[in-house]
Amino acid sequence: MSGQQTRQWVLYNPPRKSPVVLSGPNSTFAIQSATLPPPGANEVLLQILYFSNDPGQRGWISADVDLERQYLAPVQKGQVMKSFAICEVLESKSENITKGQLVMATTTGWTEYAVVDAKLVTPIQPDEAAGIRATHFIGVLGVPGITAYYGLADIAHATKDDIVVISGAGGATGSMVVQVAKHLIGSKKVIGIAGGAEKCKWVESLGADVCVDYKAMNFKEELWRATEGFVDVYFDNVGGEILDLMLQRVRRFGRITACGSISSYNGHLQSITRWGEIVTNRLEVRGFIVFDTMGTPRGAEIVDALKRGIRDGKIKVGIADETVIPTRFEDVPRTWMGLFEGKNQGKLVTELIKV
Image (cartoon, rainbow, N blue to C red; front, top):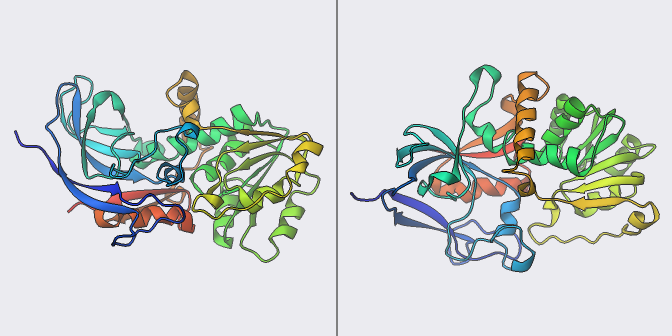
């Protein structure tokens, strides 16, 4: 039996600054064709339907990566670009996975088809009545949703008595933090930071008491006004200048959850000048990685809590909570780059156009 033909995007030039997605010798990625082996015992053949686009992927391909400091093995030159994906099972040699089933896979990468161990895929069950679509298993019920809940409840220990600020509140994780803080934990005030008036309006529709536009000329003044009296918890997704400002707005003995630093992912390093605020105000700053809880009993509890939130109407899963972009396979890197250009509202998902 002949194997499945597929195209794949591989890492061609590990970047130091912003990835280059144009064709040519300087391109970060290159497209290649491959023939997959037929699935063996306990393996499945998958057709990829959707790719997850996550800021953390940028760190997996960096030319300056320090292997001893990474939480996941980075993508090596010539390897298929890593990505979570929603897939359809085309063929199964496993008793636990059936043909035609939808699954979430962690090891496919940017490819049209993949043969993987059945243990590495998780069957998913969309719920149309509750509004849960297949893409939500790489969004609201996937890494972004689990990150939001775990980072806020388990790392920051946010309570109903806290004032919470979230940067990157218009993104996949930040928008979920807003909802978890307001509707599941019940924090008394929730403040979002996002880019653009329309995105801020959307963040407020999710439950934020106010959203501050970091693109506005008077951003600092508006941030100071929104955080008058100081805040208890800051959920940081961006690092850089906004983190520097927020170090001045967290009250004494406050907590900062360090989730991401997207402002510096493409080499745009910004110094933190207010580090002394941590000392003088005895701030607690703690970083975390969502993989610390995924696959554990606590991770399962969090997913169940998010599902209940959706079914109870506390967590919104409308069309606006994700940006799904139909994409030709040739343009997969371009869609991914939208993450760093602010083109997404909520989760950015690549929907592969079938040819």
